[in-house]
Image (cartoon, rainbow, N blue to C red):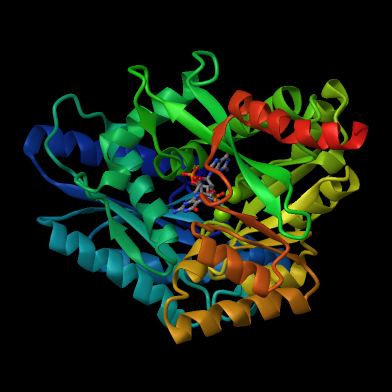
Length: 441
Ligand code: C2E
Ligand code: MG
Ligand code: MG
């Protein structure tokens, strides 16, 4: 009885992590010795934290039990094993002959939970029942493969399932660039990036339309590989977020902005992109306060740009962090407005200082429909009382349009491209000179 107890998850009655890890070793050695292929499938209950917040922990427990029972029944039919891997995460192991079978089982897992139709009203993504995201990996012949690899691959697939809107299954695909070895290289690179001087910041001017002056700059991160080739942020930021490297890089960015730019008076405000993962990490606001204290920079000279990530639900931790940052005087801006699915509820929850309208809306202005859409978005943001910044202003015509629409601030190649601090500071000095002459004259 004791032995059974030590291998059983007390809540769901499924095998616990220790037991299922042991099973995994058995499946693995069967595959190595006998060639019996198998799938490892990770299952994560979508927005479970929100479920707990909304219905309480007892209901949360009950939800996990329902899901566990239903999945347990399903997996028995496939002759597989199931265990509770942690909080709201389950794992299924099953012998399979081909990828199609793995895909079928993964899909069946999603549908089984969906069919339970357990109410989950507050999830804000348009679904109101409990669902799961599923990431699967299937054994594949590889030199030097280790047991952990298959779990790692299932985890990658799970990440993509969540990024793909949840309530769906993904099978790890080694040829997909998002799960390729390249991102593993980037992950390794990120670990040494600060020490080896591989990261830097460039600054893009933001112009205030009324005064015509550059009142702010946005700090944008750059990463180069050891051979000097640049890796685009669209590649390395998601990897940094997934591995947690964004926490250290983010602190580094804020500190660098304070010492390299805000310590001088070339510009009043610098905006820094902050990943929701940073806002979610306990102690983030305190660490920012520490940096402000050490560098002697006033919080009011910093703005944090937040993007409505697909990965993130706006939970109470984040809201608390945002209000702490505001207490430090830091402005909170909403980035790329209109591209995510949470945008409108975010506008309702957070009093943003400025909302940056994604450049795709400006670039779609060529058609009457596109133009009407941009105007509608501007009206919506304006009625909520936020300042409006339009991104991606590239031409004189677009600039004129922004004036006509009474936009507060603009950013884009027309105003200036991202550049290193030194070039930017030199430019600001040149611009300041005629102003000084005028005054003394
Ligand atoms: P973002 O914050 O929306 O940054 C604006 C992006 O648009 C920048 O790309 C910028 O170079 C580009 N851009 C600016 N003006 C124009 C224009 O007129 N036309 C066009 N076509 N593009 C323009 P970049 O530097 O590649 O950054 C991409 C994204 O990476 C950023 O989008 C931001 O979400 C993320 N990112 C960059 N640095 C950081 C960082 O330090 N931390 C975090 N968490 N994310 C960052
Ligand atoms: Mg930004
Ligand atoms: Mg943006």
